Length: 185
Image 1 (cartoon, rainbow, N blue to C red):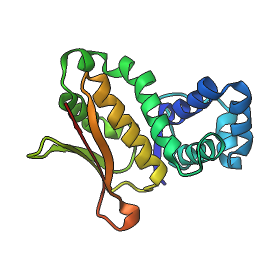
Image 2: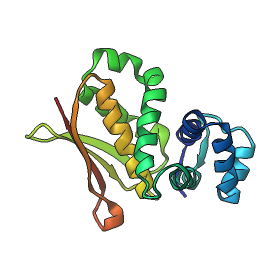
Image 3: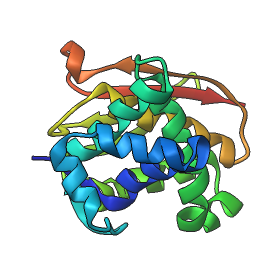
Image 4: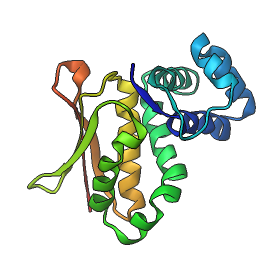
């Protein structure tokens, strides 16, 4: 079973609380699967490993309650998480590095946040950056869209203007990896 760090899970809970309010946050918790509710009854610490299934549960329920039910809100929550958590972790990289520099560092830190899979970045001849997630034990569209939102906002926070960012390939569609592509000026 795949796991992620508590920070990844709690950033989605913080999003609901800060954007939609305390009542929405409580309603979200009541709608979650019993095992996710049990996990949240105790305080989830940012650096502890938690079941990835709880992360997916929170994303899917939040999207159903506050989005359109198409998981598009997961992209917004991923971008919000980048805005609220990355400046503390990558402050130095934002100040002195390019978007590519930041993304290469983030790829190397994948294993600090997930116990499954790996992430790599590649810049092609046209200047687009490809972020590929390989061998992740529990692929889910909510996760890919969250990473796409994080990826896009990270580039923007590095001072670039994103021209496009899309999901190009997905393991859930039979592809060998999940691949996100962005280009910027």
